[in-house]
Amino acid sequence: MNETRHHVTLTVNGVVREATVPGRRLLSDCLRHDLGLTGTHVGCEHGVCGACTVLLDGEPVRSCLTLAVTVDGHEITTVEGLARDGELSPVQRAFTECHALQCGFCTPGFLCTVTAFLRDNPAPTEEEALEAVAGNLCRCTGYQNILKAVHRAAELQAEEDR
Amino acid sequence: MKPPPFGYHGPATLGEALDVLAETGPGGKVLAGGQSLIPLLNMRLAAPAHIIDVNRVPGLDGIEARPSGVRVGALARHAAVERSPEAAAAQPLLRQALRLVAHPVIRNRGTVVGSLVHADPAAEMPAVLALLGGSVRLASRGGEREVPAAEFFTGPMESALRPGELAVSAFFPALPGRSGTAFHEVARRHGDYAVAGVAAAVTLDEDFRIAAARVACVSVGPVPVVVDVTAACGPRPAASADWAAVAGAVRDRIEPEGDIHATADYRRHLTGVLAARALRDAASAARGEES
Picture (cartoon, each protein chain N blue to C red):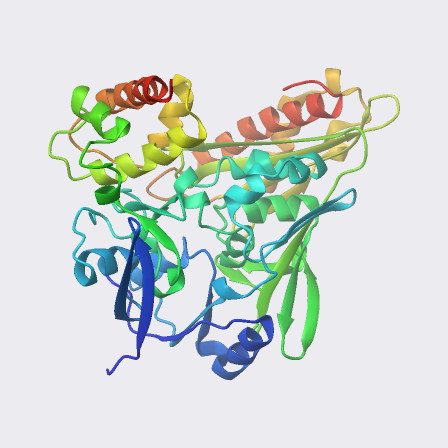
């Protein structure tokens, strides 16, 4: 089948990027295959695992449950866009410090989810932190260190803001 | 996997959307939040010839809260409705139920009206609409019609929506004074589809006796099962109601099926327990107490 292709313009991590994609191109595949940004990982490809979570206009969404054409003209932040001037973000530093990753496959999704969560709720309770990461699966860590990292990231952010 | 090929349409106005829907007929499928549709496409469980993406259509993302109830537009995301203080004030059950819908990240994208049209009998929003006696407004090139909840849900994943129609909004009526609501469910994991769930609404009379009480049960039938338990409650003060007996009346009215997640008997038991909890909390809320 000769599929119609659509021109999309996305602002990814502050840079305007363009691609020509079929209507069925998932945002996750557009980022990885068309734009070469392979930091966004694809796990289950039906919205369960959370590995492909990116920020769409600042809000975390599943990039595997979003068509690239739908978000034409919008802003996307991927894991590649979390560091500033070569320095890891507080959330990224906290994950490193707390040993909140092992194989790292799920980590990009966790980082994007937690980054948006702490922006909206800079001092979460234990329960709020748990709820925030409940939609992301990790098969290595057992989640305890990820939860520690959420709270550590909140501390690091508070220190930076002082 | 990846979605199968389809013709993509991105109408910029409601008129354009209705034109494309009229042209594509049964082969056309509307894409709003996509949190149910795109998994179906990725798993190749659905292969519509045409996708009509309404995300660019202006004016569909409204959340209008009035004393009479809340009208939610087709592009209002779960998260937006959940966060709206006006919507929560006019109909508290919306927020109570939305907190149970999937995970926050899914709620950022999924839409309330999309959940209704998807008509999953395990989902929360159809139960809320059914319990409250709300309605869905369907537009087509020929005009608009407002379909009451009792007629809207026609089977598992089936609704009264006809080819060529777009669900443009849904209306969730407010309840009279001295009313309270609650939603309780049990899922294998937080955020999963519920094994069983119950939404309850209780209205008290001037003497704080139960004037009306009903529940809507999820995952126990092809559509949300609404059970009026006013008679089972009797005109007694809410504080002395025999909720366990009322739960028995609910258990008698449902015909759950067993699957790999739960047997039919377990679902029936669970629904009774959740009905008692939800009714008790709704009655407390009706008395103005924190549940």
